[in-house]
Length: 520
Image (cartoon, rainbow, N blue to C red; front, side, top):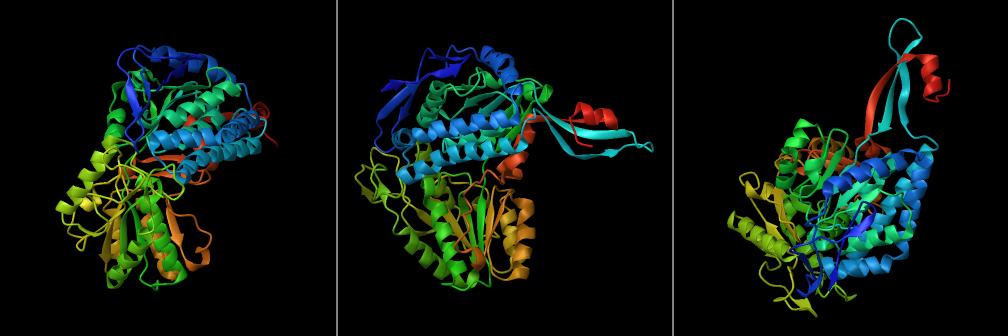
């Protein structure tokens, strides 16, 4: 078992006192331990602001982009090592490990391209500006400059590599130093990632720091130029928003939280059609990929009442080929949940949904057939499909997210009813609709959009091209209203805005053009 360290003030530091133990969720064996007790987070933030900030701001967008490209290359070279760390600490299969690692390197590479496109500037100017008074000389521009603080990133357990990289890519490209704190229980892949970047000496001193363990008093030291980006539970997100310094010093905060994402099958879609098969394929993947431990996974499935039995039969058939067990084995398609607490929470969540009126129509909440694994030692749960025939009368199914391989299928009678049922989730990261009727598809999109950060419209035209709804692309925004946290990340160049200060600059047009280096 190894002892992990934090990377602060430009050096690796071990905490003191009681250590947290990281386990292999497939076997229950301890793989590493770590502690942040005794570490000076206030000093670490100051170092990032005073050393990392000026170094990044001195670089152009193109230079920062080139840095991100080198980061992506360095991580790709140790891809197998990162995958192994994910398997033994997060319990992911090789396929799911690659999903996380390749998401990290791909996002860094994408934002490297954004930096190259933005070119040899250290700031941005929005739009063409406009005349402000009767006189043509008095002009206004909106300027975007890097904030003079530090970005603190607190990430969830399910994507230790991707979660770190997607937030860091935007902040570093914007010119803001990062202190990143991945979830402790699955931090080994992130630790290996950070070790690789430090050893490669790609980033300026203070540009990227790493907290390996409890956040302690980290957030209490944030001030008016700092930003805080959090991914995790809604309860923790609300607690962070209520912190005195976050409120009193107007710390900019972005939250991505719980999400009861929905999938809807249109009334016009015939069973067996290309669109129908895409729907079944996507539903199965979203239940089982990463053992259902994705913030974008589908939790509620709405289908026309007339074909719900056929959908359950076909979706059950798709789930029946999903093998569960030792994630090291190629023949295993789904590994364990990431830790013991998640295992307890998923089991308890299923029990609550069943008690509230949901019925098990596929799988077994209590046991699962395993390949080369011991259920008594690992955190295993098989895919489970629930059914609720009265979604309009039920409450819990629209409120409780079971963060595992579990979805509830429900009938609807009309398009308006389905949209209303989706809305009862009070905000999601993604909703997907599968429909070939153009008029109805437009109604689905406009109906689902106010309640979703992203809407995937599946039809026969894209049946062989579309990504599944759980895939997050760096070019599109990620986040959602209400329960989903109300935040927004990524979205191409939009992802930089969280780390930049927008300032209205007013004055003589010719002078501003020269000062801001704008073409006439």
